[in-house]
Image (tube, rainbow, N blue to C red):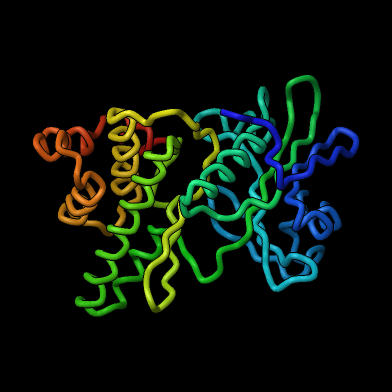
Length: 284
């Protein structure tokens, strides 16, 4: 993967801090560089900030001189060691890698949020802290919450919207894989839905630790889809077995190998390891 700074971004170094910022947004973002601080969550210091729910609260603030808003994701460890290591990272710069992947995905026609900047603050040796900044996609919600909201719709509307979402997501994820991008954490909270009233728009989020390859193999695709399937069970997403089958058929439409051995590949994708259940029970 080419990790060089994309041509439309400028590299700005301020002491121990390096920022890659999109040319178009250079001045407003650099003038708001204090927003990278965790203090952004304090509303009195940043008027207009709203806090989005994720693993942690994620600030969304107005971009100076425009009607747009930006979302600032502060990198933290997950898993077993997140309470020990917290937001201290080491090794290669995850924010810059994610920026390159998002720009590549956008250029290849994959629906992703526009990335505006990424920041790395060196601490000592290989240790650093970091953030990435996206442009907010207004009037949107993650797939898990959107599906819950469908309970307020009529049965006919619910079926119609679900079919639109399934087909749109299958197309977007297939395009991502065909373009050589493997998503490291494909789950229902990293899929964004925007209902325009005239149709459904979907976006793929959070490409941290994802990778660009020449080819995403069938085995890797099944593994990605299995992770998405597991997330549906973990967070009890309101999807039925029929919904899952429709998605699977839409994603693999035209793939003769899978269509000829449909049951085998559905079983692979739906395979659920006991270790995941144990982990969720104790660690969430």
